[in-house]
Length: 279
Image (cartoon, rainbow, N blue to C red; front, side, top):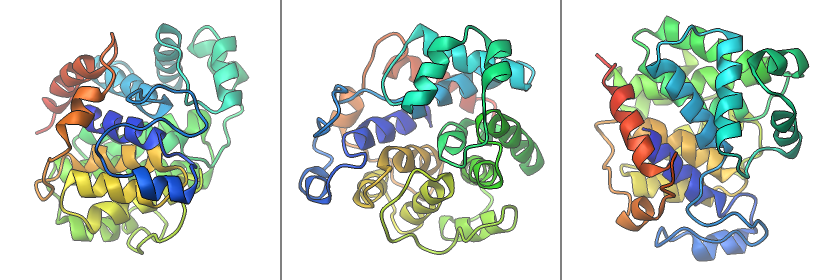
């Protein structure tokens, strides 16, 4: 889950809001690409992955699922490994706070953008739908305490839960989400994706439903254009848990993913610990 999420994030980061012609030319999966405007090194993941690691670490440690604990995890993950990809204001905010208590005291968390959804897929390991909804809601309210911000997070978490616990076929994923969260999740997305969380999730659902391999899903996510690293991170994290999806990501993307202290090998071990809790 986490490795695939990071590959989707790192690959998509090369195309985030890039010109359509650049995406059409370079979206071949042959390698990570240098973004035409950003300086981030190809193969590096962004805030989508870093915050997902914080969520996964909280779950693995069986920490209390409270706003202060989660905020502390977000601060710790950022401080130990500062990186590009965060929205500029949130990046400056994380630089300015020292712990979860200060985070909660200073945050103005009513956004409806994609941050609450991009990081939440590890929550899908929880054993019941009710627990997933509750945990996704609590973490969303820290930074995205708006109806759309919360609903997008719940939908993204339920995507991975749906596949991990074999609750249905992938063609029925959108209909499943519509039973629990307001939204047109089963309607195919067919345009550029903005930074709004519900758009990122709906595009991710579309890519999963109409493709049968991780490679095709990844390429499809990026072809939407727009906030494609978030779409790809959500889609690949969930789809990697599906028995109907061929796990065929190119070896070059796996080997090219950053592998520092909190890189590929670290995520492989986190995945092992995280997924051991399912069933």
